[in-house]
Image (tube, rainbow over the protein chains, first blue to last red):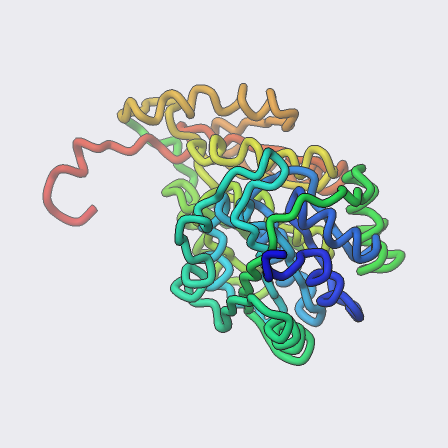
Length: 196
Length: 182
């Protein structure tokens, strides 16, 4: 036992209950994590587009300012789109919460180390970009504080959760992008989704 | 080089974006888009989102559509190269994505570094499965923007309009080495 947080437990805890939160997940493990917590019409898990998860969250948060938008992604995915931290901090939507599950590894490709294994401070980068709130979470009590910050507080928030680099069985969401998009829009917009 | 300049086209394009109910305008600036960007920034119905790299705009506008808002991506042709893998998203998921691309490395280019990407822009987009249209005179721009918006939003796909360098004119770098106001 590493003593590190376990990603599936953390994600399940942060999504129970989730209310009407809109959830984006970066490709790979974060997509399996949110699906493990329960496939949901208001989930949009990615199967590709690496580096894009946080920006999808931004576009969604601007379009739906009354809903909370949660982006779960990994350290490798976030590192590929670091410029998004600057773009998001300038827009500063108060309903956007970015949660990086940081196992310091590229988990899908053989557990190669990412830069966070070598001291790169993602939360520090988000803070320097201008995020209103940044947290590094290492404990269960930290997860509870993060959950409160998400559901009782306002963004723009960036949380980096240090998690165990465990290899876990995949829990696959639907992989038809049109299905994922259409069910998400129908759940958010109702019947007018098909008329836009 | 003589500009094929019709200063009215950015105003007409802005009106077309309004008519199409475009709410999110994602930009990496280009001189050719300067006036259109100004008009969008003044428009309270539009949110201009400055990007650090163009691929952010592809992802942003997928998120916008998930939440029921329309958007447009403004960039220059060199930015197309930054978008390629992210175009997976609108292609695989059928997100509408109008891209208005001002060309460099095109008619009358001075800068050799603009040629490789400018010359490859259309082929690269088409290799990814993006529908590509062109406007090479100012008079054509509004009609082609209208066409691009309709194709993208009505048929749920990425569509790029390449606005040729003949429309905005090639930058004369030698002239810019002389002192005085630009």
